[in-house]
Length: 613
Image 1 (cartoon, rainbow, N blue to C red):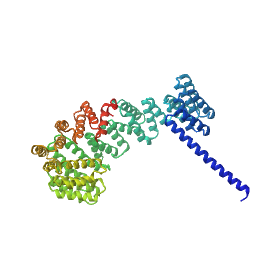
Image 2: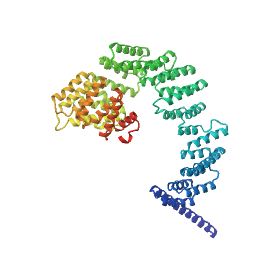
Image 3: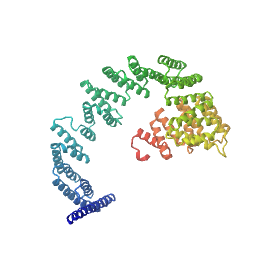
Image 4: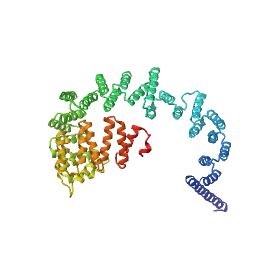
């Protein structure tokens, strides 16, 4: 290698080593500057950042230094920094906003206005800077200038569709809700693909809206646009969405049927709305929706609508506090006639399972229910999951019919087949309950201990509660008979033989006055009363539990349940808030704390947020 080549290689290596050294120095300086700033050592941080600005003219270092000058109220030095930046980058109007902000901090409004107006002029003359300068105003919460920029830039370009999202967001920041909603609707009129985005945005605007003022304004805007632009169906779709948000399913149905007729949708939209109404217990709207689809005859949703219509009738009957034998007969006939019309197949298994439930639980025809579910299981082409769900339902009926081991066998089959699935966990829990009912408490507890780690919160909580019950009442110093009686009562409750169950529950403390089950008995009586929809009676049992056993395991459960009753059934919001607050105060480690705080705030707002934290 000649001398010239060697010299070149040496110089290149030296340059690289020198560059690495400079980079390392810069990183060290950045780390020292950030550390000093985070520690509140502002003077030291300023020294570091001033050195960084000399070495690298980065925006990041500039803004860190700018912020530190303002914190230290060194306004003259801050202004020098900004002026230098403006000289270096005269085309970047955001630095004019920084300069104006210094004047604002010093309450020099006229000086600030001059700088801000210059920034606006730069922004509207160069569309490449429009957003960056508007964003700089937003940084200092000077949204009225952002609004001015977007409106002037739009006017100058003669394009009303420029900066739509930016302007809508700015209106929102300014509290100009009407203008914001109009802007979003204009976006939607130009591009319907934004439907989901804008619905999400409106959801935040309309909640909370306690007086319904914003919903009413949005409805008026949509109606005007529907009248003016009858061909733009997106506004009708938005109106349907708004009605649903407001739980006005009747209004939503009127619009849905109109769109269905206009577009020849064959009932799809109306069927979907009916299904949503059914899940919200809006039964009259659900019934009208499904009848509309059925009347179309050639709709691909005809069969599903037929089946859903039976579900509507089921909720109408079973959902009542009291229903007659005539109601049940009418419901059973609806199931049978629909099954007869549509035939027995994998498609109609929901109807067959529904009829079996009515027969077994409400008409004392357990054998008929068992026969029907057995028929479902043997249908060709039935999906594995549906078969497993039906097996669990069939096992439940065997349990009702006192065929304990048949029930356990079916639960075991599902547990084995769906070992790592929620269905398998449900079957395992139900099998543990069978062992509990029959007094095999140790085997039951072994199964429950496995289920404590379930991914399903409901299953894990139920398993933990039952396991604790067994632990507390089966042991060296415990008498096992009270728990055996309690298990008998629990099985009677499962069979919906509530009167006999109550007799057994009442007998336990009479025969065993020192039993530790007294709080469990009261809580179980509360659950029975809830199933019977005897809410005053349910509240009585909870109050007794809270008065006598507040320190026991079910104290917080009882308090939360009573608060729910006061809120949802008795509509006594003040009392509900009082109880939720008592739970937060007295049981800070309770599993119900998060939900109790959420409900408290929903009822009272954030006025007492600090008080209950």
